Picture 1 (cartoon, one colour):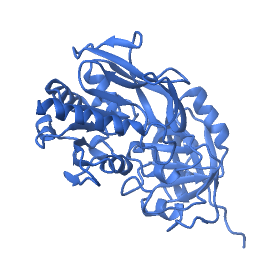
Picture 2 (picture 1 turned 30 degrees about the horizontal axis):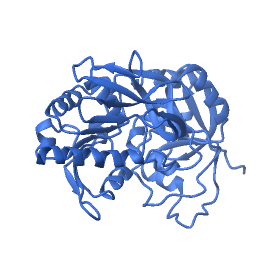
Picture 3 (picture 1 turned 90 degrees about the horizontal axis):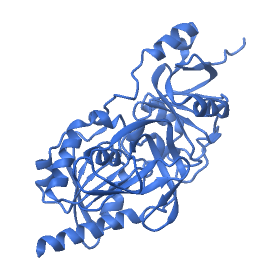
Length: 382
């Protein structure tokens, strides 16, 4: 008796579909399909809360060979809505591995699909733009394609979607500094990665992490040396309360640093607009120019939205916060990748200086945070 071949199907909202082999959990999942270009670090990608609500396509062809381990996880679970790879490794050979990729996908009920032409799929998304998609396996894959397309088209779009409440911490918590204490930071958790906190405490900072609903008075109640807004998923246009909170912090003169979603919210707090990119930047090989130093950095990205700043390198804040410098730009498409206020102590970047996994070219941005905190403390002492 022949063994039936398991089947799965990926369906895009434009009607295009790809057949493959299921792995991970069996069933169906819907989300925005995006592609990530990193050739390593798939575990960090899967556990990054910024990928909540998204079906992630890996452009690297061979995934799973290093397995999964507790140390490299960026959070307590896998956040992606679905996972697409070309070739799933049949063996796990890394000495640090504790279990297989498929084991963790099954544990967190993440539906995956493999053995499809990921190159063709990536090129299609590059041409058309990211869109809603669905992965269907098991009995779900037997439905007529027209039915599956309609299910995909009925899913929520990422534009207009708020996800901060989904990924944020349920309760406030503290992480103490290591080595010599250099100050303190109040973090608004919009989907923070563990490696971000590690970079701060390694530099002597006491970290207090607050839920996404925290007010300005909550954040400033610990008398922090700075306030930090983390990375996170969703449309920055929906984060009205967090933007208003940030404006209070900026008016109070408390130093601010933001990463990724935090960069978008600083942009909105300064009075700029945000917009959705056609297919976004996701991966660990994006070239960015730091205008302060003139250096080109290879950086890690995960964003589908960006800040729109019309004008040159220096512009006025429409919200009245003085001069603002577009401090970093992506050399692939000139997207704004960083903001630096000239009249208040605030800066942000759209990419990930903690870069786990990825290049460490931009790790110095955490050192800038220490410098800004020390300047603020000296100013208060005098």
